[in-house]
Length: 195
Image 1: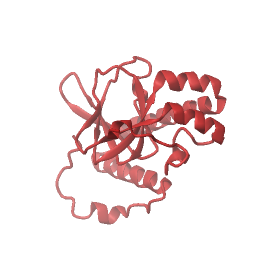
Image 2: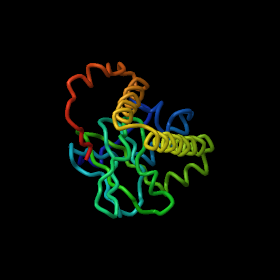
Image 3: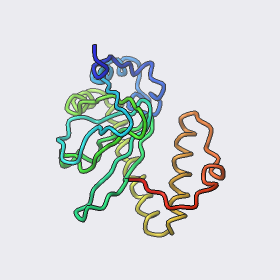
Image 4: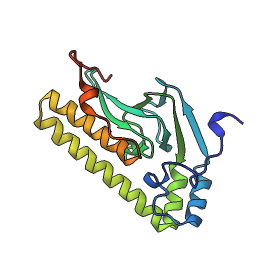
């Protein structure tokens, strides 16, 4: 069996409380596992999907981290999100059915492939799953609004500090120690490029 076709168990996943199984009873988790049975391992620097690819799957980050990037009409590159374990990628392709961004692994990472057509069908049968999907979409919109407010009102150093605080708090929610930002930032004297 290849790495891309290995079986995945939501029941035993270390980030299930942050992902789609959150709040589901075991019988519904079992049904979800039949949809999420495949995972994919991507190496640092590899892409999970590219802008223009058809929307077929959502991707749940099991381990590692992935950035999403949009390339503007003028060729400018903009990092739009850093996804951590337990978070979903691909939500921005739902309405157009085409990915507007590309997703690149920042480190060796593992993701669950969630075929959206199957997930949508299951969500119609499992109200708790449908509610969880709505909650994830809602949280994504809330975070996007926060980012828009941040970009419009602060200087670059304040935006960087807010990004680092955001990532630190998200890691803390996953059981990691919050990052000591003083030590992380100490010694940074040159501009940082995220692209």
